[in-house]
Image (tube, rainbow, N blue to C red; front, side, top):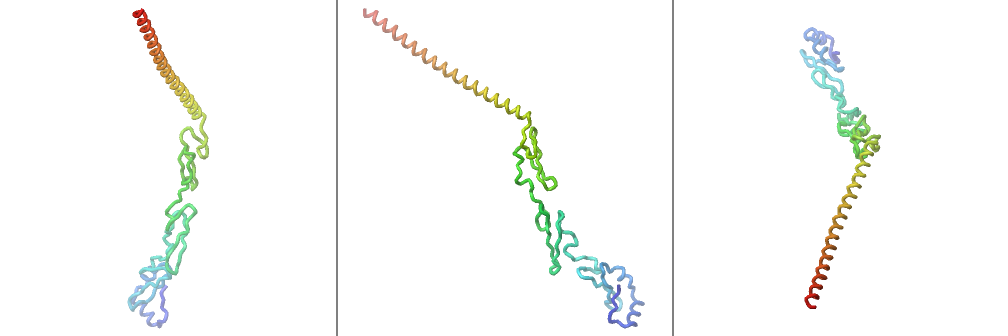
Length: 196
């Protein structure tokens, strides 16, 4: 659209005959108006929040969708600024950061927490199952029982071996004392025999 406000008809007629208005009419986008700049030039007068020679640049802060991860862009048109209203699982200037939903989930120390659709979900280690990997499989229970029994047997064998060694040491000690007593008796008898 060409703006001919405040111009008389002869000026408009002369202008239209001497100027190619199609350039301006075709190139003023986003509701821009084609204004007469001088006798040979037309200029696009842009609508609010649009700039550029052809009004091709949208200057609204939310036009480029700066908010990520489904954040809602809220414009402050007085300062041409914006603010992102983030979802409950995102934060940051552009909602670019994600809250760690696994931060407080340990999966009973028997698995690894994964973020699935913004919910913590446990991937359990081998032989564990359950929502929080809290259930031990029958196979693992059997393995733990065998380990417990084996440990008890090993402790019993070790204690028995220690008692055996101690008893052998006591027997040796007793045998030495016995030999000493026998030797003393023999010596005493020899002394008595010699003195007799």
